[in-house]
Length: 109
Image 1: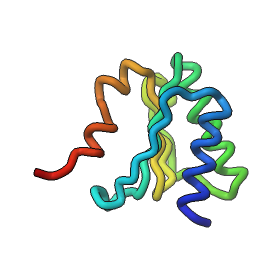
Image 2: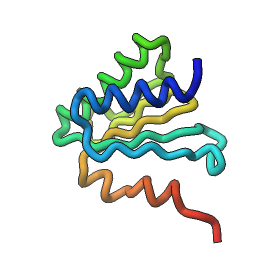
Image 3: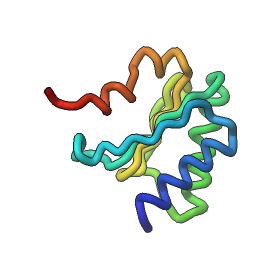
Image 4: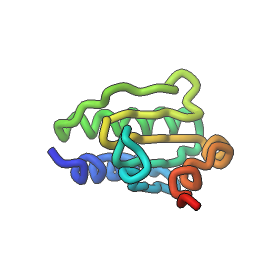
């Protein structure tokens, strides 16, 4: 199955539960670990946890299995790893603090 289908499944799963500010970053040229990062915000710890869970459930129903998830205990930042696509679901304050979008879109000088 394709990375494109997985990426689209993840974005749809986030949209279905009203994730905020969904960003899809191509990081294949910058990373040997993954090709895509999907970053989204939830409105509360419970929402972050529900979003990450929905991503795993919807992906599994589409034939994709996550390699693991981290952060469900506090749900300030939940990472779901699918290998070629890594999903970060965060509280807005956590997302602002770590600013992954800027980190992964910096161009070398």
